[in-house]
Figure 1 (cartoon, rainbow, N blue to C red):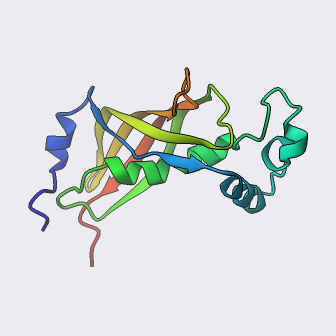
Figure 2 (cartoon, rainbow, N blue to C red):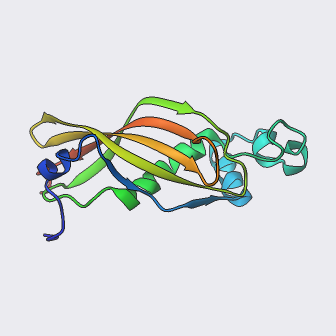
Length: 157
């Protein structure tokens, strides 16, 4: 057992507090293109720098869902190790709003505030975080969301 791992009860005492900020993630054209290929969303504002230059964005922008998909990576920087937790899984979003486009060449990071810890059933605890994805040097965030993470305990064979 990791001696620095937190109990869920200890984490629950942080409700209402910022629990961490992730490292910066670069949003470059290869990352945008890879996401476009994976999702089959090849809209020109994402994948055609020459054409996108004449768009309202002045160049290519990341897909909103690319920014959302990076939340998992951001959470790895922030979520502590828990005692007696076997697995944590993405349970979904209650709210998600895209506020500003993420221009190619930008860097983004996630800021996480723990808003709720709910025991669901024996061995399941639902964490709710308000997450804000910031754009480096940007006046407004890229997105805000209420994200749910389900922890399971005692599931090992």
